[in-house]
Amino acid sequence: MTQAAFLVLTALADQPRHGYGILREIEELSDGDVQLRVGTLYGVLDRLTADGLIVLDREEVQQGRLRRYYRLTDDGLRALDAEAERMAAGANAAKRRIAEGRRAPAHPADRPAVPPVAGPGLAGGLA
Image (cartoon, rainbow, N blue to C red):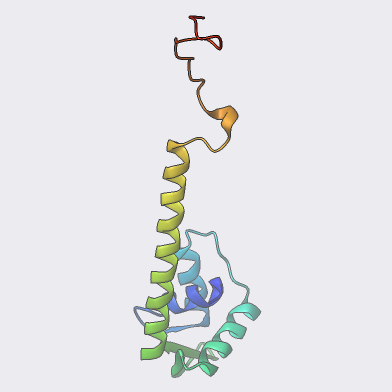
């Protein structure tokens, strides 16, 4: 699932929204990091509709313009939930690897020097 599809489904998880409302919700969900273009949004909406993950909820005329509201289907909710679980598992795996990497230096030159143990030399005597 693309990031754009995931964000559109997430924006529709709590209520139906029209295109501009979806764009605003995505911007808010991403703390302003993601700003989809209108063309991208409508391409994603078309694909999600064709896949049965969203449906047209209703159409309203507001200020002389037609607004189409979309909502998640049950399949869309399941797909969003599965993708959120997959992403969470990946994030957890990355965090484990980061934690492991901090405990054990990866490169031998980064490891602390081990002092030699005093003992017999090569000839069997003390060095």
